[in-house]
Image (cartoon, rainbow, N blue to C red):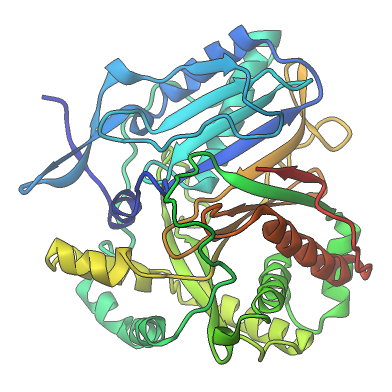
Length: 448
């Protein structure tokens, strides 16, 4: 019998939070300057996906073992090549059932000129950072297949990656010491009334099975980063400014809601639990979540708001406060399934998700752009999953001195023009924060 590998606490959370209406999958999109050799890319994809057995493992469950991965070589996925329904629209439309399907999909959309590559990942299999790792390996393999000059530096087929839940890895004494950090977070998490700019648009119950999103880009050069450090009298990061300006944009979006008075805007922020300098152990989801709250209407002083966010994010990193979420998920495993679903999975966790991958592919080789064999990567996109009760998700990355913002929204609750207005307002705030130029230009890419 094939070996079983138990899911970590967070992988199980991603699995149990998954549903057809709100798939727990994320997307990475690659834009090219030149045409791609589809057959070479298919060979590169096959080579790389075989290194990561988690993507072709099925989920099995029993009372004795709980949820576990079971590698199944018979369902190794392949690259699909075709045309989407609309240029710029994601052609991957349905959720991934890990019991019956592999945990990754790849689609080369040749409708545009040049083509786009879409990768879809189930979040139980890997997080955004692991997705970028996979993409890096894919372009390295593609360069090898097209030029026969670049030798892949990543060893082929790997064993199933070993990963232990970061909370479970703590000793009992360490878990006890952390209580004074974790319990206040748990208390505020349950005790605040969250608000949202979303409202039901229809009672038809028609499901929108493709991700609805809008996208924008802003320049983020080294000089802009230097200016940011120079004008603030505190160790402010681009991510701190991003969180501050998302709070401001959501505050603006909820002004007309009379029920929003004294409510809270909550941002759900993934926290990387990888140890600094540790070697990569393959694609896995090694994240947790932290929640940053601000009361609506009390966040208009921009500098004061930025200072509190910078302090809070520094404290979150210093004390690894993402472990509090893992503690709650660990507790939920020991209560009846119905109770844990009502307490965690069937409730509104946040107003929006904000996932920032930071600078990706800094090893640039041509006009600030990454070159893979005979193609140049002109741009990247990152779509973060929405969930029931959290209709907005910001996927952010920086590539080639461009900050790309992808806002995925629940099309059942938010009209496209309202999502465009929200993103445009966010761009205006960020332009002012990063460059001192409050732009009123609309997002550079809009897709439904």
